[in-house]
Image 1: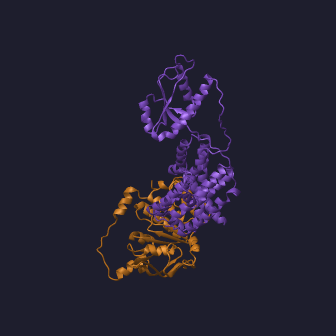
Image 2: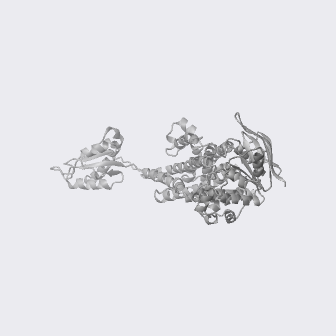
Image 3: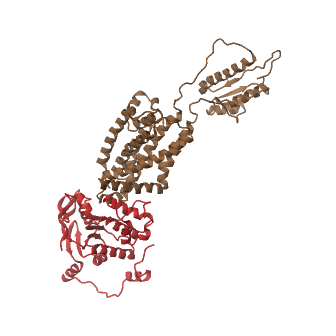
Length: 369
Length: 253
């Protein structure tokens, strides 16, 4: 046993050093997941606040219209595209869904009609047919603004009003939610595509065959791979966490120590699939289609990129048994919801079953050449 | 002298081809034993069965009294294997290659000592991909010996090397023999077999057709009345090449 520990430790130490000497390995284990993090982080950075992209076409030169334009530009709900100044340009952008609607202030907007003491006017919201919902919502937003303005000019008491109040201080932002999926994606990348690319190459070069003439055991070789991969994986994910925290304001609710242990568990489980595929394959051509058949359904059905609750019920049931699903769910429950191991026993159980099945197969099908 | 290896009636079949067909021989402690023969004669298969890499159909191989088929795990500690074209994982330093192979046997060694044995100590901190073909062969030899084996297998060790590198390798193989290790090698080069091997087995179609020292094999051939046109030359082209490019074995760049 002591002998095996020394063997595994030496293999881990040297192979981990090799990873950090190899720019391609660094790219795939650290930079590549970060690119995805930035892409998905930027897509979700609106953090749940609805905003409308509108063009504001001001045909009036009244001082009220200028004030109103300024007020709208400062609004957090309405994002005014300053480049669009004509209705034709706005229409073109609306047809490409780059704008939700155009707000037109007519020439007489904000002028004081003869005999009246206050300025008046009517703003038009112009929209295309596939933007009806946005237009309705935008109209009511503008309506609310006008009501506030009107009450300053004309003192009225309104019998019925409604106010809204935010209560849940721990709700998930869209980014918080997708981060667990991104971690799952990076686990797949490292755990499956790593061995699937490396092992057939090692076989082709006869390196595994040479090792098979030594007393090195398959389990020692697997264990060296697991420890090394878990180590590199944790480094890669630590960097992802730092970026997520500093750039995208990730909110960590759970215990980071528990999370790291859970992540190692996830890496080792998914790595088993890679070891089984790479260990079985005689060459790259044999393994590539099989790897894709396994990876792509898992990537799309386990909640990596889209939440599983968007799927039809039967598909949710099926996908809940995939090996990656309890991993991503578990990450989310610990990270976002502050759950502990005792709360995620069903997930841990499913991961345990998969781990036994996967490694049983991996040992069975492994060949040194 | 005692026999280190006993091979008795060894057979291996691939499909309908009898690759090895009843091969028997023995190898003494501290001798270089060559297996010669055309491609497909069964040399490599014979070697692989002795190295525990191929299952044995029938017959026995014992190394140092241990049956290869019954105790492959014990055998692995007794043998060192040099593959036909040694390759190593890139971005690995030479010292690390030695450490890893030693670790595969559960042993901790001084890598520099083993690099010195094959005159690679200057390359200790280089990555393996910067080595020439001959240097890779030398590194491979020393990695095969990290655990102090009693038997050393080499499969066509000098194929593709230039004359200096070949001669250098011969010297190293002789050094291994002189440490009391039994060396078994295959080769296509007759000059190599003649210079290096203490005894030779010639294989054809899965069978051994002759087995003796190179001198005796030549004597026997002459005794059968063989003669060839005689040219007495004082030197050959290889001597010219060595003379022009450096008589002494030189370090490859």
